[in-house]
Length: 453
Image (cartoon, rainbow, N blue to C red; front, side, top):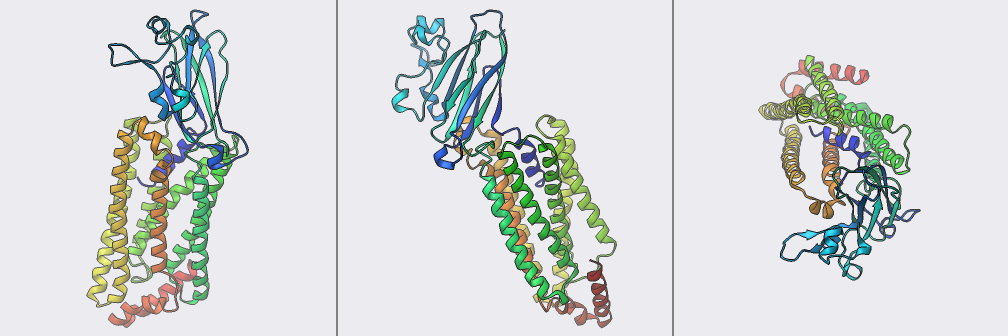
């Protein structure tokens, strides 16, 4: 299910952009950067527009407040002999001297707000008969909230809040992905350049498995560039073609994880280094990768926010979990068998490569499992207060960190299986040590497969 996480985040990214739908009597909070902290061509602002109002009386009203979350304690007034607070100035609050008549229909703000608040607090009464658009200029980076309230439960209204950052139309929690994926594209390009230098230099000794690694490295560069361009496109406020772009990128992400597990599987089986061919097992590996690709796409599509339900998510993630579990168990069992076979033939130098890979994968699996469980518990128990302090780093925990783990794993694998002049002779060493006829079969088969690849 690891591969579905970036897809779910991608499909949700348009929903967590700078336009938020306001619900009745609820608070919506979004992180924002000041122009000084991130830069950009415009001054950041929050604009609230109440629409579709339905009320039985012309004098009904909506109380609106915009504030930075750390100023929450400055809202409301203490009620004598009552542990609760009164937050909206209505007739009862005026009668209790908690606010003035001029504040009727507004949120009650502490008198100390102007001197102690982090940023300003803006409150306004909006009449149902003529709701006006309200604009709030953001001068400091923070976690800003919009809260609307109407005392009459029979009244209806809807609205939108635009959280416009200085840098563009992406949400502030998403903007770090621009430099991240740009840097990832450069990093993978550097790895590809180093790999291709060794590949061309030692092209006469290339093993079939190294052709798979070459193709995957080139694909990763393309995927990172496309992902980076997607966020540039969204930040520029593009609306046309967004769905198509999202679908293409979703396919690339699903293909990346399916190919990555497939590559790990054939490497762990000793393809090219221990065995000249996997025979029918290669088709089984490809079929499993194809199923994982399809189930990853299906899970991400069906479990998107507007289609999500516990039962549907269970049905979609079950086959994905099965293919992922099959991959992991098959990879680790194949690695163990390959290492045992090499050590049985006293080929300790070759076995050392696979032992390094085994330790790397085991460490990554344990680390990712602990990481996934920890993040799941955090997300399940996280409150708005927690979000106010973690909105800047949450993207990295959910999306950036798994990408870094994949990058490190791929770099280690590419380094271990990097092209060299001794690759073909090193790969043939087991057959030469055991059986010259098998060594000849390996050499001819490897040459034929290398030409076919």
